[in-house]
Length: 396
Image (cartoon, rainbow, N blue to C red; front, side, top):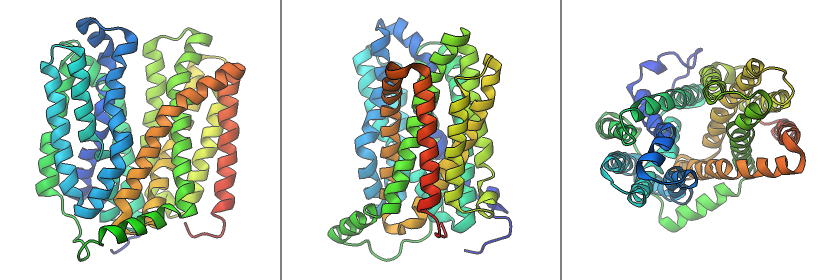
């Protein structure tokens, strides 16, 4: 594919990329639009706060186990064959939540919706890697991260506004996945598959070889640590820090955390240009350096307004780290195993979301807020140095 001086030139005029953006917005909808309605659901269906959070777990848990399977199916039978049914199931299971009279049935439907969502997060990235090469791939993945950040910023407000109409109202939103499914089925133009798929045994052998690449394993580790940091130090424990030290309101806490997503979207939009100036691995290392700086600042600043500075720095680190890591994985593996490898990366991501709050809680019990944030910063610096040394001499 022809490369231009500006990797983003003409990219945003490509209808394929906008279809990928639409899939990405479905990925983030499942939790972000429902979370603000949880207190309303709790009151309407008569459940406790510890029970209502099951609506999040029921949705996310299927992806931990099924995402790699869907990735393998996407490699074997084609991206659309897996993606379109997933979008349809996501839409109808989500919409069915509006009719259920009981909390157990609602949780069951959320499991079904989570099954539909499981292939989306890996295959949307796979599509970008399939359609673009080189710096255009970096630019496409960066723009996709911007779309993800926009969804993370918009959906909570939209879901909260709909919840005013009733606990069920945010569950109308998944119906938007139906036109997205149609766009994928009839509008997405993918490159032709190269001949017949490998026999299953040969495919699994090749996949096992790719999974054994130390560079791929290192990149999985970076993804894990990124989401341990995000869900530990920022999403879970930053609200606790702000409430403890500054008695900040939930609205203000939400704005500070939302600014992190905004900064992530802005930084990732420039990834294509930055990847033309420095290696991708260097961008990942810079991202971890920003994680370290921001987490050192969080517990030391004197006023709640000052917390916007480290939140923006952390978001900028996310905007550099995540799409650059995805681009590196896509570069290291052949197209025939790409969906499976990116699906494994998606499972690692979910693992980080799960264990991050637990690890941060353990650090807090050991040494308070200082242990949470200084510990995160020390680990982030170690990872940044490891990246710079490990990829030294590499073109990646």
